Length: 132
Image (cartoon, rainbow, N blue to C red; front, side, top):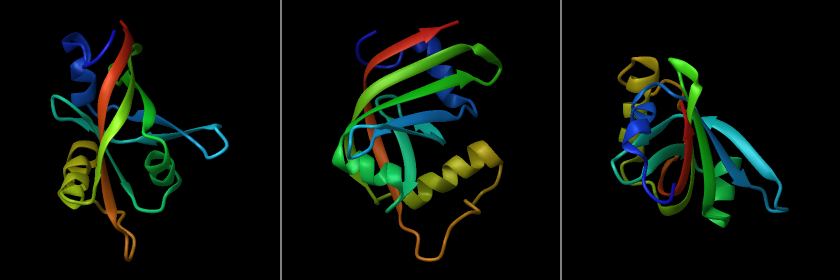
């Protein structure tokens, strides 16, 4: 399906579903990382720390893919291919705390490192596939 998230599958993004984020290394090899994610109705939101491999990859190449399994039915899934339309540090600290509440049930992200700078990536869905 082209563009957007099908309404029938948008609930997967609301659940504690871990997304596997695929990016490309400088040599074109794929790199995949499990991530927390969020959906604002138009963009899939991913949060990371500056300097991590996925951060470097997404800054170099804005094309990404994510796959998510429904945690209540692993035979129901959503795959999203899209493009990063914004990379910002603005609001990233608040967003990682929101994700900590969703995924860990705590008010503040507990794994911050000294000097860590959080980065928020807004991904525009361009193509989805789904099942279940």
